[in-house]
Image: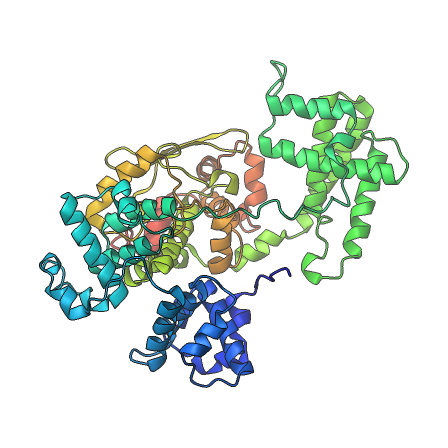
Length: 572
């Protein structure tokens, strides 16, 4: 039987009636989505069995189909954040976890008092976090101290941690040790750098599900192999960089866009029984097909998708560009160009969707305050997963506000795209937009956010060491709590969550704000967005910018930020 995966959001899960008594709980938001799903399943299990106060047998019955303790551990984490300290069920769930694990290979029966009296524990028992460790974590920490003392270890390596757990097959012992070290000495890199690497190496590799479900065949495009051989040859030449000396090589993103349009265009011609060649009649035929398909959509969310004026204009422009590269006859090209110009002229009478979203975007001042608020929250939370999420979100809001990268350029890497010159961070990347370079020193206002993603919640005293290590190891700037790089769509996910639209809107704001300053501002906006064509700038600006561009005497982006916060708070 295939196991169904729960894909509901937090909001959908919390709508269930059994969560009603807990919706006002102060730490409900700290429960991770995985733990929340497990808690939801347990509430349904308890409701079906009419269980009001679960005992050990109830918990074991709930997890009977699971060979591991993961479900019970998820429940323990959820209960710890949902229920007041001292609630009996908090002890019961821990008893159930111990019962589920069975007998450990290393049986340590020492109690808390005995462990605290151990001479090796003297430097740690007065620390604030000592009382927060549960008995299992305290026992593991005590055993590690004995292990390290016997071998004279002062700075354990990954291999040392692996040797400590060599007699067990899982990484559970190392994970308990990581909790103990982080609780006793929060912000110490030993737990989140060296020990984290040991845990990754000790853990069984997770099999990727990518590619297990094949993508459906495109219904409105032909396969690339079905395009005329001459078309495929030209695309191949561009992708391999084989062009004449006088010919300009399109950007990779332009080639991708062109290929998609050509495949759709060919499908329409084949379905109509027409010759697959670029003609004005073929373009009209494709536009009619798009209009018919858009009208057939029932979901209002996708109304007019693919048939909006800007989309039609882009498609015709790509076909005209490809037709020029193929060398089709001059009269056909002129007819297509005239149609393209007519579509471009029609754009002025339509308010693009992005400008509607731009009008609802928080102002520059509110955006910057949001980024700093997220950064401050990350320092106040103790849950590491939440801390890393807040740090990454703060970085994405701040960085994309000043450097409006495309998603294809946003997977930054320390030591390759982002450097440190001893005083300031620098960016040096080749953008996907016509391979335009983007390089230079990053604004000082971005420094606390870059420092934050370097430190990953650790003590600021380790900033220099962790930054040097990140630069040397060439690791990605945006990573999750396990150290895995985040997807290229992550910045847009963050902007959509906090700003109501994807990160692409940052380019609209840069062009709008700097466009108010006149030609110099337009040039600066083009540089920040890694663009060449000033006409592109006009396409990114909201309608009021045409008048605002006549204004003079204002400063650039730095001045806009200083004006938003006042001179004293400009660096805040």
